[in-house]
Amino acid sequence: MASSTASISDTEAWKDLKGHVEDIKKTHLRDLMTDANRCQSMMMEFDGLLLDYSRQRATVETVDKLLNLAKAAQLTEKISRMFNGEHINSTENRSVLHVALRAPKDAVIKADGKNVVPEVWNVLDKIKEFSEKIRSGSWVGATGKPLKDVIAIGIGGSFLGPLFVHTALQTDPEALESAKGRQLRFLANIDPVDVARNINGLNPETTLVVVVSKTFTTAETMLNARTLREWITAALGASAVAKHMVAVSTNLALVEKFGIDPNNAFAFWDWVGGRYSVCSAVGVLPLSLQYGFSVVEKFLKGASSIDQHFQSTPIEKNIPVLLGLLSVWNVSFLGYPARAILPYSQALEKFAPHIQQVSMESNGKGVSIDGLPLPFETGEIDFGEPGTNGQHSFYQLIHQGRVIPCDFIGIVKSQQPVYLKGEVVSNHDELMSNFFAQPDALAYGKTPEQLQKENVSENLIPHKTFSGNRPSLSLLLPELTAYNVGQLLAIYEHRVAVQGFVWGINSFDQWGVELGRVLATHVRKQLHSSRTQGTTLEGFNYSTTTLLIRYLETSSEPQM
Ligand code: F6P
Image 1: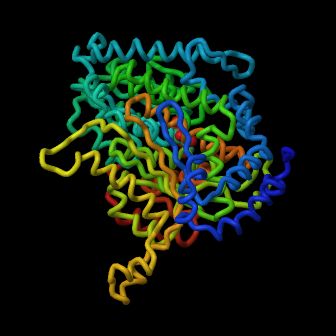
Image 2: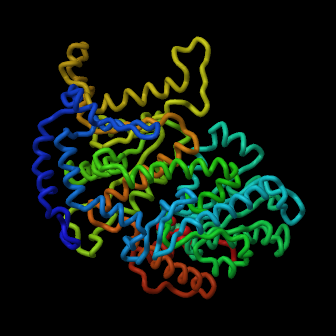
Image 3: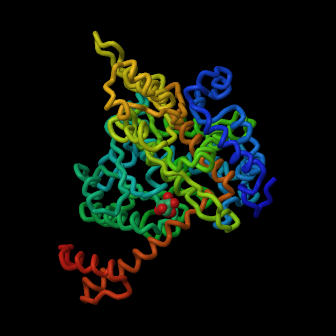
């Protein structure tokens, strides 16, 4: 068993897996896939979901060895410590309790000795009441008109998760029906172009602005909030802010200082990491305004179902645990640094961008949780696009270039089925034909012998050969309701945590975002003094000085 300061790579379990890589190198998925018992043991079902990881470059023995690694990393204990509210985010001295955000009302989850579930439900009840007032029109804007449009301002975790869920629900029949006549938009980038796009076509009289920021200090969000406050007050007067702006934050003092009525602030807590906050008011408020609380409650229930599975299922049958272990296998042992997230669902088009933050901000670390340099690399380079769009873009590289483990996510029942009379299959079947075919194309490939039999000309054979043996996994969801979206979110959140627990890092801090932020402060000051007093540039290297001079001399920013 690894002591808290020993690296997981010093354990026998890790070394055993290192040695086992040679065995796996001798295998090909083409052959592994012929073993029905192996494939059967690599299928997992839970609450309507079916996971098939038989196309991973792994044998039953590999999985056993990975489970040993989980034991060496004290994975089960670490999961319990998370659910018990221990301060596992040690560099920020915080609990990690996003699971409490979706826990049933009668659950008991403690942070610092106090059950947090009642506070969670107080905020949820407040959101329910507020969103019903807005949606029913009983809350009106400064000129007496109902507020039918919402702009949610926020960035990173205060944006990507809510955007993913919003995009996933947009075409769900129940959510679609309940969003009739309403719009939800997201303003994230400090690029003024994003402001222009967001307010385009909206009337301040009928718009509610939700400022979402855990800290309420993030430069982009605060300047965007001031910009939209100006948009509202220029049209409706300063007093309109009370009716047209609300906030979600852990920092209620700063919310009030900004000028938002504290009664119109929705709290969350420092035990919710930004990228794990979509189930707090961060996501629940904007989504309830758009779809109604009852739809969003289903999303929370789906996530909670996975939380319970993750907390209580033995590791060999635990979906997030198995997925996390397989990712560790791919990254640390097989040496595949990237992962493609490929949902065969347009509704999931914002899933990969969200998981990029959840995964890369969590696990892109250089030291262990004890601050020791890691003797191996952590994290994954995540990217993805919905199928079939990705097929016409980067799949060439995945099939014949670099080996990138792929997550194929498919949906059994389309949100919007279409069948045209006379067509061979329905539109959704057409989509899903690709979902089923691509993993086999990657796994089996195509040999020169097969091509010869097809009379392919000799000069083209090398170009048309597919090496195969490229790993993927398939996750099949019964449909894409709010409930299933919650399940999918929680699976990936916990999978990322599992990877971090095994690597022995802190997956819940993000010091790596600080340095660039601090340097931008220096540039901001310089831009101000150069523009207002013509001050010469100071303290920058040759490269940055040259670029800044070009920018200052040729830009036409409005006069200060
Ligand atoms: O990118 C750094 C980060 O702190 C993220 O972790 C977070 O989601 C984002 O900035 C936004 O922070 P806040 O919600 O405090 O505005």
